[in-house]
Image 1 (cartoon, rainbow, N blue to C red):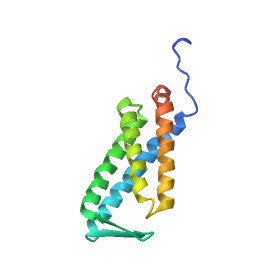
Image 2: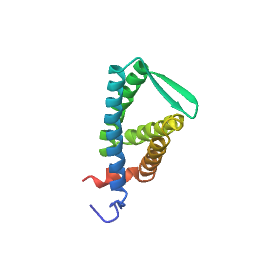
Image 3: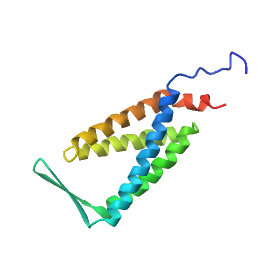
Length: 137
């Protein structure tokens, strides 16, 4: 490979790999959460600040399982440097952050942490996503 055709790879390759690992881990947790929701009672109740949140566990469980499986698949594809995986990962991380906004009244600390990680994942993928593909021989 000539010096003119070499691509400079930044230190952010590790962060993009971290983003992929976080997506896969989030997917596994979502799948487990979905299985627990399907095996649990008919409804999940959360009371926060005088507001009552009621979730149908069957629908929530299947949604968590489907999103979890997508997260795992996209995380695996992201490690390979696939362009479509970067696009889908940004969309899913954005949807995750938006979804956490609805849960702030019930679980404020957890929601804020997940939103911060989602923003870090989006930043790493959008700014340095190509580096991961170029880092592979």
